[in-house]
Image (cartoon, rainbow, N blue to C red; front, side, top):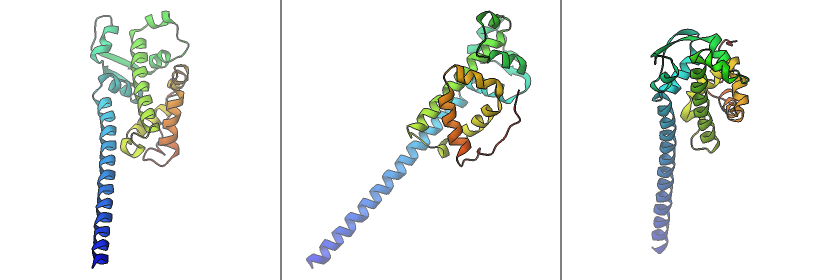
Length: 189
């Protein structure tokens, strides 16, 4: 009788341990996904980051300026005419201060891309610290693929200290298995 009782207690203890471990694991996965969703929500709710993404995505047309970037416009205009040529000039690492006065879009492009690359660096850091994994934040792969196609951005990335984090993201999203691993955009020169 004592052996049956001991065996029953042992089985119940083991079962309880397995259930506790499974619940713990489920909670960790849920928290990880929640944190990744918050990063993505921060991106989508930040007009400056959305604007920078559109600058990368669009080849031209009118872009709505976020409130914080309107101060760069002489009359506080709400729109700019997106111009890939000016965008490329704005991201030149050797751009001189006096050249920024040639067109207000130059400062707007530089400021928004700096914010965009800073956000991507935060994502790279969180992935590096294993706060979440690539599968939790797959949409970043789109932007990594897009940045790889943007020749004008490469010098800016290197000159202003984003290279290490962008390379981490390229490795995670483009060299390893992910939905964006094989995405190709035509290079924007």
